[in-house]
Image (tube, rainbow, N blue to C red; front, top):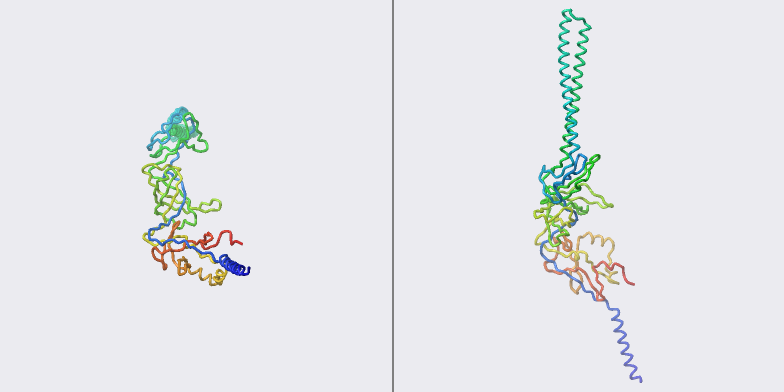
Length: 401
């Protein structure tokens, strides 16, 4: 019996030792890598905005009345000076006739007053001569002089009445002209806000009847750029954008204006950037939402790093992590040393390489300097044999207990 117990005990001891080392074996670490490539890199600023005509004119009316006729509709091309609508002119025509009659009557009154003034002047001169000859008395001369002064005042009053009625007559004629609505520019009608028979009132403010886009072959985008990115946006930069109506197409434009006035919305500061757009094929329409990408910098045929490589830091665990812990002053000097990436060195261990970067886009960064070559692999993440992935900064929920 003892012959069988001794081998069995030996087997159990060996199995226990093997199990102990298996359970306490450090998990194998696998690093995910990506290549350093050569190519073009474009840095851009993203924003959203709305398309609009460069010049949009709102056509209104300065007189009140009922819409009598409409000569244009939506999308109608119009020329400057073309009649596009008419307000019922009946009341305005009557006012013109009435004020014309008052004006003519005032002119006749002025002519009569001037005739009386001429007669009073002759009578005054005659009495002045007779007074010298001693034929008339001073009282008769004073009466003639008083009549002359009254005639002169009557002429002044008549002239004022003529000026007043002439102004009323001119105003009535102007209102009659305003009853005919004309296009102030060449363009296309993009909005019509009235119908025939509708009454418009211009008592307090001018009502808008039509909106005319002067030239839809040239449009603009008013975008809102965040204050963190506005320093990179300059006049003349190239722009590409898409609209929901044509998701397969990409349109181009150019920055025309960077406005200095801030727009604050819920404590978020943005600035308006105006972009010129060529719309010769008239595919773009006012009001469309544009997803804009403003090209702020471009480099061609340069080395490019994956942006994830700059964020990667090797994950240390247990005693090894404690041994790698550096004093605060040493960590500060290391941080001030600049950017760094990691490559695989001897023993499949990460080796730090100091780099200097330039412009970047969403996924790649320009490599300005550093001991890296084209097609060399840099570490972008790590995966343990237990299936944990890491970018070198630890898990979001902290260590497991």
